[in-house]
Amino acid sequence: MFEVQDLRHATLATVSRTGMVWFNQETVTSAMLLQYYLNRIRQQSVFDIINQDDPNSKDNVIQSSEENKTNIFQIQNHLADLLEPYFNKENGLILDTLEYAGDKQVHIMDFLPSRCLQTLFSMLNHVVRTVVKRQLFSADRATPLTEKQIEQYLVKSLIISMIWSFSGDAKLKYRQQLGEFIINTIKNSNISLPADKSLPIIDFEVINNCGKEVNNFVLLNKRLILKVNGNRG
Image 1: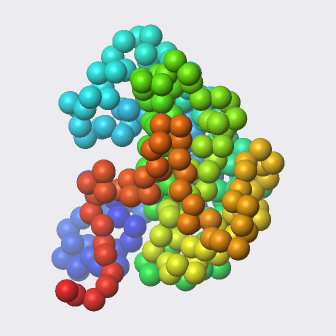
Image 2 (image 1 turned 180 degrees about the horizontal axis):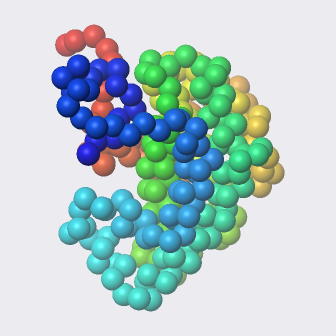
């Protein structure tokens, strides 16, 4: 069984020999996908989500005890609560940004909201895992991050992840425009933004108290196939 976006590149032989189930794009909306992600973070360990294809991962060892599992889900549920205002159907930052990126920007590849959101979810999974590891399993766990530190790190990581997920295939000027749109749209006075408004938001790294940067190239870690556009050689 294969799930494809369309039959644009299918041959007549393929079409004539397969059975198909067609879903309208509105059958599963972007709002549904966002709610599904929040529900999944609340109900499934982020280590399991990331390491589905690697059952021997060291991450599976640290969550083996029931106490660790309880603590992991407690943190993940808290992070989901912090993210929820940005996932809302109405006046939600993510949906507004997704719509802007699709309607106002020029992309190299076909702009598919579902694909953009899946990329965003992959990046957020690693952000969530970083927070869980910092709070429970790092050498600095005796001095956990404060509520404000967690919120700032999470939201700033969300901003960077949206820029790369929604306009990563566009020219630099469009990523800069998307960053400006996010900064002008976000409604959170607790998030400190760069003092120099003339500089693009994508020039700033998001660092947590472990000194680890947000990995904007999470897809490489997932060993997914990337399509690179450019001249040969």
